[in-house]
Amino acid sequence: MKKVLITGMAGFIGYHLAKLLVNNNYEVVGLDNINDYYDQNLKLARLEDLGFDTSKIAYNTLLVGNNISFIKLDLTDLENIKQLFKNQQFSYVVNLAAQAGVRYSLKNPHSYVDSNITGFLNILESCRAYPVEHLVFASSSSVYGLSEEIPFSEDNCTDHPLAMYAASKKANEMMAHSYANLYNIPSTGLRFFTVYGPWGRPDMALHIFTKAIVNDEEFEVFNNGDMSRDFTYVGDIVESIKRLLPLAPKSNADFNLKKPVSSKSSKPYQIFNIGNNSPVALMDFIKAIEKALNKKGKIVFKPMQPGDVKSTYANVESLFNYINFKPSTDLEEGVKLFVNNYLKLNT
Image (cartoon, rainbow, N blue to C red; front, side):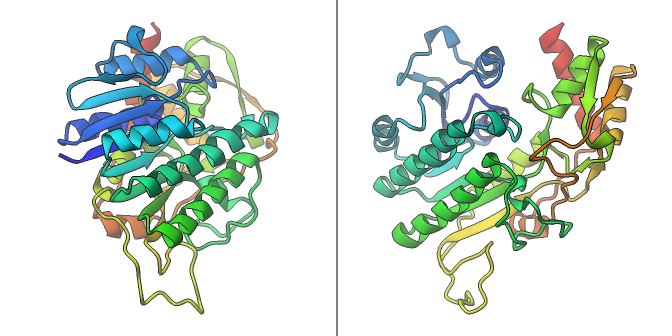
């Protein structure tokens, strides 16, 4: 039985990945600092759904369940992170913990350096000290920044981030490559494209729009609704990660050093887009929510926000071919599953 560390397990994707891996005969150890960036009760509810008595959570104390354990730790705590690696001897690490959110990075940029750069450095240092078979880490579609070369390909220019969140994720990619080079740590970065589904974060559009419509409140839609996103259902995302875990990159002697591409390397390193390859107009997304709730929303149109992009559209053929899997969840079906879960948790 392979042992997997999931950082950010109380988070949206981490929770779903833990459930899937346990059901597929992996031993999971989850780590999270349960910070207050958004409602801590939602994070605790996810952990309870995974079988933990959250009243027993204490810092740096491992709660042990049936093939799943949880420890409250901060990624900036290098000493205890290293001790966890030493004690557990992980086969795989999936680093999903991060300070999320583009708009929040305009208000609190220092938190992105602490969590996303110092925290990730501590994961890399721990993987160096206690080697793993594969490190999978979360990057973001936001690294494409100013690029208008649609659909986004992994080898597009990513040198023009629009906010600190994107800059920190670009830094993660470069840091991982340096450790793959120096210490032979097999590393795969995943550029996520607008993940949605049950138990989703309350700062994300699907939750904000649904809550507003349910409560008969106005909600803001930016760029006057002229936006599109490559919405991808969370179940398809975690299935992709599960398939990727045993497929660690290897050193590649055929890599062309005179014409290098950014998504591959002569070292054991690779980058993939992970998305649906099918962008959806934001207004169509809102219509799907309205249909699931059988209720119209009160939209207030606003101009584009600083740091935002008009559209995201992933070229994900590389990942499809690598793991032999393509997302298949229909948007209306995925939105309905979220809405049903939202109503269950909030009514």
